[in-house]
Image 1 (cartoon, helix red, strand yellow):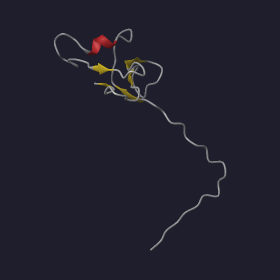
Image 2 (image 1 turned 30 degrees about the vertical axis):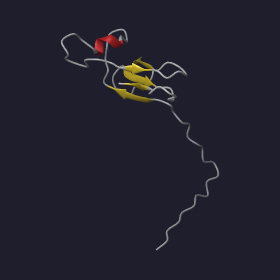
Image 3 (image 1 turned 90 degrees about the vertical axis):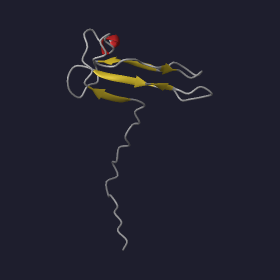
Image 4 (image 1 turned 180 degrees about the vertical axis):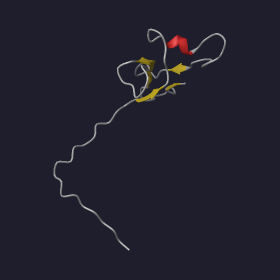
Length: 88
């Protein structure tokens, strides 16, 4: 069985590629990332960031792009070179 489909719509708009992922549920005061790491360990307990030679990886609280709530977490990592590139 062979099933094919074609669209007659010539106005297909390509989607732009986004190089980052937003996740909600990171409400803090004044967009302070360190509020996610309280001393009592009730939220996150540590952060490890390794940047490649080509640039710095970034992590921060974002208030401009959210799905629900007021804040989201923005993690941006550069492509790896000889160093493992990560934010965890």
